[in-house]
Length: 291
Image (cartoon, rainbow, N blue to C red):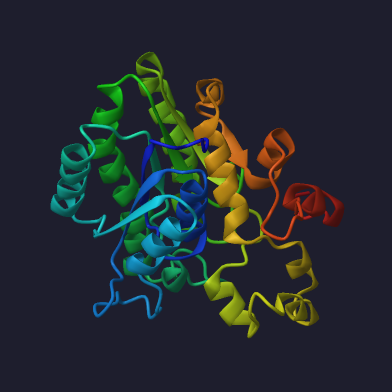
């Protein structure tokens, strides 16, 4: 029996990137996964990408889980409320795992500009998509977990502390996800529901592969442009981190913590899809990135 057989998960923002990898690896562990996002077949979002939630749901099923695609704009409260009413109805009130990976901030971030020269509208929109949407989603998900005194909420972020990340609006969004997890952990602990934040390392997402003009088959060629890319990880690595957390019967002990894919690989022993164990933290220390 697979570790997450019979468990029900929602991956909010599961269309691509870390969200898709997490959804797939929850499926690999046997979970039923509701994959949400705005890009559907025949009705793509304004992100300008071709990936869809249906594709992700099919990948979940191909991994051995049950993938269910539901179009949701997580900035629209009515959409989110309807999603969890559907989960409640179809799964007899069961929700074991929520992954908040709604982002949409890449095209909104204007690197190299101080906050007073950055588009204020883009900066505020980033907080709507990456902070407010997470809050709305957790608001409607938490009662299903509290009712059963069990569950796990994972906030996907970038970074493992509160330091500045090169752009005020980007920093605010990513640090907010960390504090959301810590604050939810405090209020959910008595109900035996855990909340953590989780960050991947240098993520080899579909968009990043496109940026470097490579595919997963020849991704190492991108090192000619950026040698740091050699320590990158696929979305499956953080996906297996999320699956390992969800399968941990003692996960409540980690509630409120800021976790990373590489540290959890050390704890749980999982690997990336090619058998490697990329360790961004160790590499960053060696390179002096955070000094």
